[in-house]
Image 1: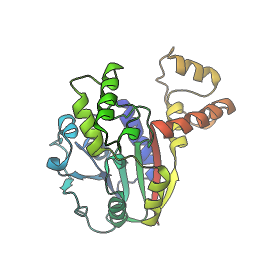
Image 2: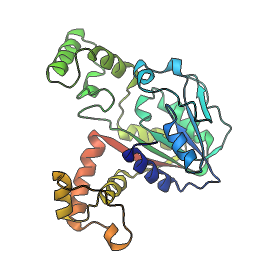
Image 3: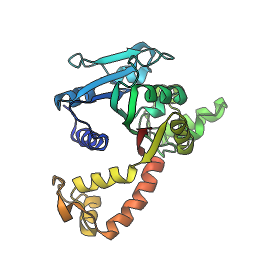
Image 4: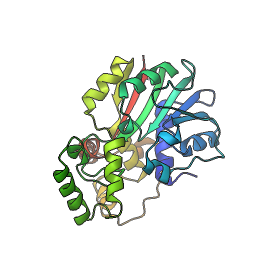
Length: 274
């Protein structure tokens, strides 16, 4: 069973993709298949695919084990085509995947091949310029990725441990993972690759953060104050009608918040197959 935050995110994604039970949906980069299983439990015709386990990083192998109760998961080797026929899927879901792909051009081409015309790819992935990388805990790691000076790299790692970002026993593993399996790119360059391969790109990060606030019961400045101060339990579900809207001041906050969120945390996009 998915944790509440992941479950709410998946519900939002399915709504954006307008999925029906008749459509085939792919979880691209499915890991242990948790989202595939969750979608199947909702009655959706969901499939998953990922790189064959022996080709994945040691951090992945430690944190993820394939859920044997989930079927319809397919593995492929680096450099191979996705194991599906052309135009197989109406929708594609992808969570925290694009930042791990070295050859984004080839992946975009394959996604375009297996997605039907008019189909939608929902992707939520790590920001290009994170203050603190969500996978390793390393701060400003995108600035260090191209460094070939061993002394500078050692100083950086020592400071990271000294400041408490990563434990001493984990720093070598996290550093190795960041060099081999994280690929930070500008959003403009990513969008260019997607458009080149037949997708229309829509940034819906604002919409995603708005949905998050609504689920947490934030409608006005008072709600926002309590939300930020964590003074009240926010179990209120999303409501329809006027109460599902936020006021002008919360919208101003949300614009500011979204700018920094997509810069340093996550970006959420829809890719529409044209």
